[in-house]
Length: 202
Image (cartoon, rainbow, N blue to C red; front, side, top):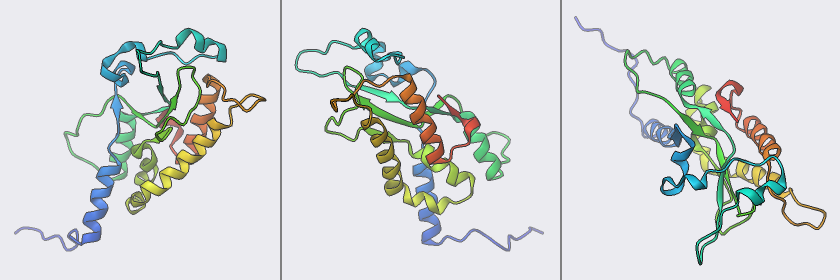
């Protein structure tokens, strides 16, 4: 005799939509080596963030003719394996063979000019990872909250943009971003996104 599930999942439109949104939001950008983030795998675009403003003179790249140099600076990552293990525990994933999880997932990034200054370059200067934003809600079992992704993430991006836009000299000119600035922004992100500290990596 086959046991019957008295409480089968309901195929209601809102449940299906919620599941689809959760899958979309919880799709991280994962990498194993920093070089994988470089455009066309050009390792020259991976630079060590200077500790001092003046050090940007040593890492800035000369652009090709008719081109400008911009940097995408990563503001922190998540340990993807540990993050997926936390999600598996939260949702009682007891499969013997789970999908492999490895590498780091980006939390957020910003755009800098060729001198390491935060600039509005005709595009959104701050990008927040949907995975990093939605992780806490998923861990808390609040998948419906993931539907607020677009508007809520823009508020977080706005706070990060304001933080970096305030880095100016006494004449109001933007200063080059240095390691201590990124450390502060990382802590701000961890607090805003409510990311468990043991999952984050500077």
